[in-house]
Length: 196
Length: 94
Image (cartoon, rainbow over all chains, first blue to last red; front, side, top):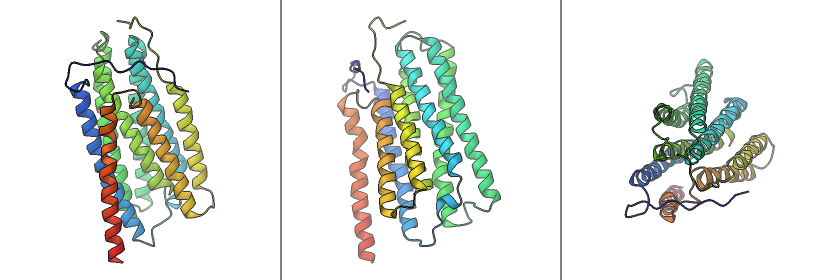
């Protein structure tokens, strides 16, 4: 399935990795601890509450499954946009970035619709411990998605301005790392909160 | 400026089809009437597989310097330690 890939280009830093890229990775691992704390609290609270509702009886699994699909597609469009940047394909980069921003915004729109329906049916952050956990976990993830959409919008504007046309596309890669991480967290959240 | 050396990229679309298939299987398993322990194990296994695919291929961990892999796995050692302490505490509390 995997084709051969050229090894990472050497950079003139003590680690051989661009300092900004190292910084983003360190930030992402701190985010792993952040979401671990939230998920850990969810698990402990759920194990301690025998009356925990079955998520599929309250949450819209098919709609959220579609949302999960959209987020995964957005990771594909972004990684292909980065590949286009590496290949010197400015048009491919710009199209991929626009598609990613639109898919991310759509994810947020669907989540906002889901929140509206749930609140209308009585599930709020204060209605129950399940509601509190649900809105805290998905809400914090949604904020991360919003931050990613804003970041990617800025990157897209810069791409249309030709900033990444001269082969310096680290900015695209850094935004991509963050976006893929947000997708990765959702993969786990969808399973733990919605399916189990 | 185009890269004069032909760059080979990982099979991103192939990974996508894998992620899509795993997601469909996950949702299908969630609706099955199987033992709860088995269901949780299968669902978590599928989710972790998907997460690894994203991390290794889309985030390029598989092809990047080993230092980044070391950084990426570090929190899981911390998480394991926290889980051990947590469950030990829960067991002592009865």
